[in-house]
Image 1 (spheres, one colour):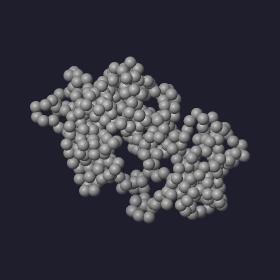
Image 2: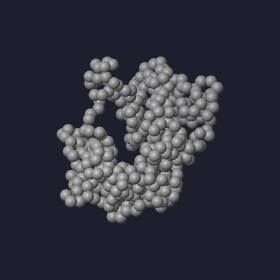
Image 3: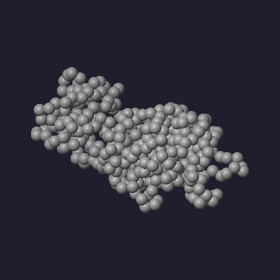
Image 4: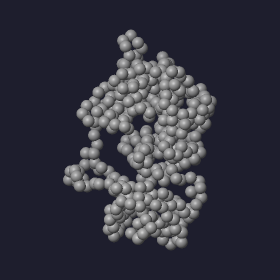
Length: 435
């Protein structure tokens, strides 16, 4: 992938970007001073859709990184945050205020009109994917507020959070409504600006009445973002100024996601709903992507097994290389590698095995197509293999060893058996090559 594969869709200090999941023609983004815009990918035009107030009313305060969010229930509905929450039901053409001032509205913290940096502003918004109208809001002056009726009434749960250890003066870096149920949400806070680097991360299961810390053994680094897996609510990811951390037990134990991931501030996380890829937005080192399918399957029972062969998701062959002039650029422009155009076989070894580890690819119930040797290290092992030739690719876990190409073997769409042999043990998974 090179620079020619990217397109600019906003201007200024680009901040939030939201793509309509039902019609990718529409892209929404913000820039400094809270100026949301709607970009039309069909006509390649961009329209400012910033909410305003009539003359004579108090001026709106927008954070430099002002949030904009699409409703998970209706992509025509947008939310934007100033000191109040705005809602648009027509893609930003018209706005309505659906809250009072949700900040502390502390005059001592508020900059004069026209100042570049405003305080006492909304910085994070999340509507429950489980129930429409349940909306969480967090502010830069520590407030966490909730409405259960789409703005009809609001509850300030900041004091409840403080009783669990979340400082009232700490910047709310993220509110995240759980997909599991409407009563569950996560909040991360930061006192980085007060030289306090403790991780503040909390979960509620009763609409903010009570909170429990899920920071576990996270390092002494302020948390920037929290994200919950779509399929497994115990699988959580956080980004801090040292990288990405993951828990498979809802926050009791956290582990650094290393491999080739650099030590870098991570400001945003999202999981692609189709590809099961964790997409990581960093400060200064670009975007990083890794597949988290294996982590959904990983738990204490798996870790207690001597050998575990993870399921192999179905894949379709990616068509590449025949169209476009990017191959003519040589090394004149930045390019980054794509994921392997094929399968990645993943298995767990509790102990160092005796003898070789092999993987056999067979037609479903039929002839063996290929047998290849895998790695035998303690822990998670990955072997990537190319569709349409089964040439080995560089593994995606940072292992820089390149394996030699094997005998070409064209693979057509259909079902296949994948057999992992470790010593005398054999484990089999089924997979499919999609049309």
